[in-house]
Length: 138
Image 1 (cartoon, rainbow, N blue to C red):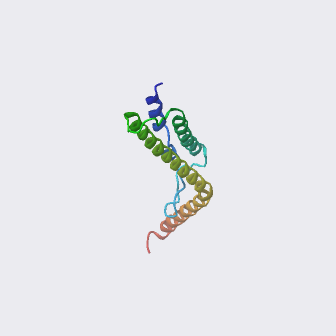
Image 2 (cartoon, helix red, strand yellow):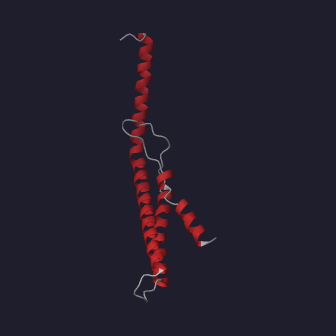
Protein backbone atom coordinates (compact mmCIF):
# COMPACT_ATOMS: atom_id res chain seq x y z
CA UNK A 1 0.00 0.00 0.00
CA UNK A 2 1.46 3.34 -0.99
CA UNK A 3 1.55 6.34 1.32
CA UNK A 4 -1.11 8.15 -0.73
CA UNK A 5 -3.44 5.15 -0.53
CA UNK A 6 -2.93 4.90 3.23
CA UNK A 7 -3.67 8.62 3.65
CA UNK A 8 -6.82 8.41 1.51
CA UNK A 9 -8.01 5.31 3.40
CA UNK A 10 -7.47 7.06 6.73
CA UNK A 11 -9.39 10.12 5.56
CA UNK A 12 -12.36 8.16 4.22
CA UNK A 13 -12.53 5.66 7.09
CA UNK A 14 -12.26 8.22 9.86
CA UNK A 15 -14.61 10.63 11.63
CA UNK A 16 -17.26 7.92 11.70
CA UNK A 17 -18.89 9.47 14.76
CA UNK A 18 -20.54 12.06 12.52
CA UNK A 19 -22.19 9.33 10.46
CA UNK A 20 -22.77 6.32 12.67
CA UNK A 21 -23.45 7.70 16.16
CA UNK A 22 -27.12 8.61 16.61
CA UNK A 23 -28.60 10.38 19.58
CA UNK A 24 -31.96 10.28 21.31
CA UNK A 25 -35.00 12.13 20.04
CA UNK A 26 -36.10 15.54 21.29
CA UNK A 27 -38.92 16.75 23.51
CA UNK A 28 -40.99 17.58 20.40
CA UNK A 29 -40.26 14.27 18.71
CA UNK A 30 -39.41 11.82 21.50
CA UNK A 31 -39.70 8.69 19.37
CA UNK A 32 -36.06 8.11 18.56
CA UNK A 33 -34.77 5.50 16.24
CA UNK A 34 -31.91 3.33 17.36
CA UNK A 35 -29.77 5.26 19.83
CA UNK A 36 -26.01 4.69 20.10
CA UNK A 37 -24.77 4.04 23.62
CA UNK A 38 -21.44 2.48 22.68
CA UNK A 39 -18.28 4.57 22.81
CA UNK A 40 -16.39 2.31 20.36
CA UNK A 41 -16.67 4.61 17.32
CA UNK A 42 -15.73 7.81 19.20
CA UNK A 43 -12.75 5.99 20.71
CA UNK A 44 -11.59 4.98 17.22
CA UNK A 45 -11.89 8.62 16.12
CA UNK A 46 -9.89 9.72 19.16
CA UNK A 47 -7.18 7.13 18.51
CA UNK A 48 -6.94 8.23 14.87
CA UNK A 49 -6.67 11.89 15.94
CA UNK A 50 -3.89 10.99 18.38
CA UNK A 51 -2.12 8.87 15.79
CA UNK A 52 -2.28 11.74 13.29
CA UNK A 53 -0.66 14.13 15.75
CA UNK A 54 1.96 11.60 16.88
CA UNK A 55 2.77 10.65 13.29
CA UNK A 56 3.22 14.30 12.35
CA UNK A 57 5.52 14.92 15.32
CA UNK A 58 7.63 11.84 14.53
CA UNK A 59 7.90 12.84 10.88
CA UNK A 60 9.03 16.36 11.63
CA UNK A 61 11.45 15.30 14.36
CA UNK A 62 13.15 12.81 12.06
CA UNK A 63 12.87 14.23 8.55
CA UNK A 64 12.48 18.00 8.74
CA UNK A 65 15.70 19.99 8.32
CA UNK A 66 16.28 23.73 8.51
CA UNK A 67 19.68 23.93 6.85
CA UNK A 68 18.89 26.75 4.43
CA UNK A 69 17.41 30.24 4.60
CA UNK A 70 15.04 30.19 1.62
CA UNK A 71 11.79 28.32 0.97
CA UNK A 72 12.31 25.29 -1.19
CA UNK A 73 9.68 23.03 -2.70
CA UNK A 74 10.26 20.66 0.23
CA UNK A 75 9.52 23.46 2.72
CA UNK A 76 6.28 24.30 0.93
CA UNK A 77 5.31 20.61 0.87
CA UNK A 78 6.07 20.32 4.58
CA UNK A 79 3.96 23.40 5.34
CA UNK A 80 1.10 21.88 3.36
CA UNK A 81 1.56 18.62 5.25
CA UNK A 82 1.45 20.43 8.59
CA UNK A 83 -1.76 22.19 7.59
CA UNK A 84 -3.31 18.93 6.37
CA UNK A 85 -2.36 17.08 9.55
CA UNK A 86 -3.70 19.89 11.73
CA UNK A 87 -7.03 19.99 9.89
CA UNK A 88 -7.35 16.20 9.90
CA UNK A 89 -6.47 15.86 13.58
CA UNK A 90 -8.86 18.64 14.61
CA UNK A 91 -11.67 17.13 12.54
CA UNK A 92 -11.09 13.71 14.06
CA UNK A 93 -10.94 15.16 17.56
CA UNK A 94 -14.16 17.10 17.00
CA UNK A 95 -15.87 13.96 15.68
CA UNK A 96 -14.72 12.02 18.75
CA UNK A 97 -16.09 14.71 21.08
CA UNK A 98 -19.39 14.74 19.17
CA UNK A 99 -19.62 10.95 19.39
CA UNK A 100 -18.92 10.86 23.13
CA UNK A 101 -21.46 13.62 23.86
CA UNK A 102 -24.11 11.96 21.70
CA UNK A 103 -23.57 8.53 23.28
CA UNK A 104 -23.74 10.02 26.77
CA UNK A 105 -26.94 11.92 25.98
CA UNK A 106 -28.38 8.69 24.62
CA UNK A 107 -27.52 6.94 27.87
CA UNK A 108 -28.95 9.74 30.02
CA UNK A 109 -31.92 11.06 28.00
CA UNK A 110 -32.84 7.93 26.07
CA UNK A 111 -34.88 6.19 28.80
CA UNK A 112 -36.74 9.40 29.68
CA UNK A 113 -37.58 10.14 26.05
CA UNK A 114 -38.69 6.55 25.41
CA UNK A 115 -41.02 6.80 28.43
CA UNK A 116 -42.36 10.10 27.08
CA UNK A 117 -42.92 8.52 23.66
CA UNK A 118 -44.84 5.61 25.27
CA UNK A 119 -46.96 8.08 27.25
CA UNK A 120 -47.80 10.10 24.12
CA UNK A 121 -48.63 6.90 22.25
CA UNK A 122 -51.06 5.87 25.03
CA UNK A 123 -52.64 9.34 24.92
CA UNK A 124 -53.15 9.07 21.16
CA UNK A 125 -54.73 5.63 21.58
CA UNK A 126 -57.06 6.96 24.28
CA UNK A 127 -58.07 9.85 22.02
CA UNK A 128 -58.80 7.42 19.18
CA UNK A 129 -60.94 5.31 21.50
CA UNK A 130 -62.74 8.39 22.72
CA UNK A 131 -63.34 9.52 19.13
CA UNK A 132 -64.68 6.05 18.29
CA UNK A 133 -67.06 6.16 21.25
CA UNK A 134 -68.01 9.81 20.76
CA UNK A 135 -68.36 9.46 17.02
CA UNK A 136 -66.08 12.39 16.42
CA UNK A 137 -68.57 14.94 17.92
CA UNK A 138 -66.81 17.68 19.82
